[in-house]
Image (cartoon, rainbow, N blue to C red):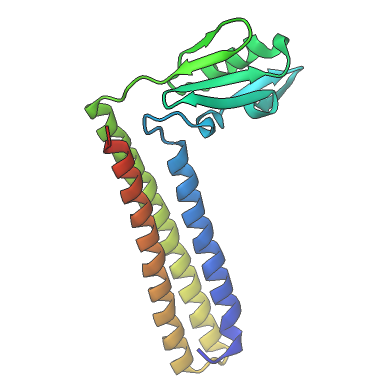
Amino acid sequence: MSDPRLKPLFDQLKELMDHAVDHAANEFTKIRAGKAHPSMLDAVKVDYYGSLVPVSQVGNISTPDARTISVQPWEKNVLQAIEKGIIIANLGFNPTNDGSIIRINLPMLTEERRKEIVKKVKHEAEFAKVAIRNIRKDINEGIKKAQKDGVPEDDAKTAETQVQKTTDAYIKKIDELTAAKEADLMHV
């Protein structure tokens, strides 16, 4: 690809595809694999003096062991609001409040539940792959438009081939992330 008019398209291609892979990886971290992780509470919002704020802004979230998440509020009067926020978030957690700290004990995942979660992971992966394919389609349309605006046909064909190679590489990244998450989920 020697035509400089195609470079912005390739910069955009990589940026958008990186974003799609990052988004998929972020979604995978939200999917519970039976191990406690502070990011599992990212969706929890707490009513803090009339404003809804993330739980991480009103307390310290930690994982004392592989199946427990604890939330230590910075102010004791927020304890009830944190507990309520966890319940409202409907994450399937049952928080316990001992008066100074909130603990969430994660139950062991059954084989059936693990398989359901793997289906969710595959769904998220497919969503990411569709996003990557749509990016490829948009970039290829940009290449065709550039060709109409004077980019040589050979450069356009080379660019389309490179777009396909890049797409394949990013699809492979999604497949690798999916396989790793699936292995993590199925590991007892």
